[in-house]
Length: 453
Image (cartoon, rainbow, N blue to C red):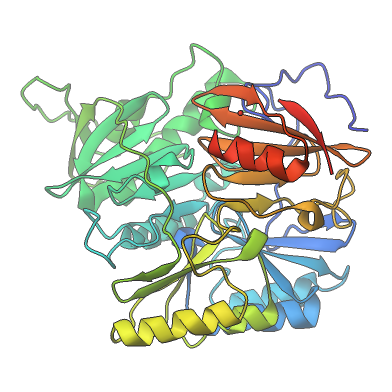
């Protein structure tokens, strides 16, 4: 049974979050390992989901030598190793550092950056946001004050197609045609030149930290700021030498040279204009298959063995993109035939490679036996679907890794039972059926209820 939360923490509408944080951020990282029932867990941040071929090989070797032989993909496009021994932390950190996967020990848990995984490959976006991700990561690691961000604070970089914009970023950056981009922080947004997005994103994070300190509730994320507390995005851009002008008013650069004592800002000479908070169409995640000269595949329930992981090699452009939808993009094939050949090989290796696969969009937390809080072996219980909304199987009410937006919640309640709820448009609906499989299928395609295995 879950322990009751301390009375000083009031649950927020978002499951698992709280409006008052009265403890430090214990989010696991590559150096701060989490002790689970199946051993220690390491979570490796991959800004933009980017890996080289060498780094991909290193992770396969690491899980075989130090962990349980598998790699898990998170809902932020990061990688987890489970089943690590008590004394392997030093060896793991050396492996990661030697491969260039640990550029800063102080910043490794704040490098939370997701990006449109097909950016620059299919001609549909307005900017190659993977370049933004790399520069933002460099800036994050270069500043000491950014270590005050929690391990859950998220930057989302969308190339304009609407996929990353729906991932619940604290700072969301959306590319526009004409070389501009919108920087969104909570209920406020500004338009900036695309080339200056990384520095504007950093200023937005500074604005959040200022607001969190003023609120005094220990907020880790923007949505945890108390009602009435506003993060001053325009002011933060001004302090970083980014002039902001109201929409509809002639631009007059603001000459503000003062910089907060705890933020080391370098002049960016960027013109920024406050903008309406954008509501872009939310696009579906990349479907499995061949997209131009790129191959897209998904990992069944978000986990692959070392052998499956190695099947991704060699990388045609020496680049692997891990997606927030527990998949992978391999860009840079010489032609369509080469891409189709690799897709077939990955299908044989056990990846989800077809857009009509019944496992597409089905996810699960770790469950038993790896997690002590779980009430069921959800990965063994999970059933395929027939398309429709994403489905997430959760072993407890924390619902770790559940999707954003509309989704179907399959929650273990103990004694072999699951509660199935459809979340759409901010509301929930109960779903009924004679069997669990029927209930989940109905929920995906149409609606809190209880079903039996």
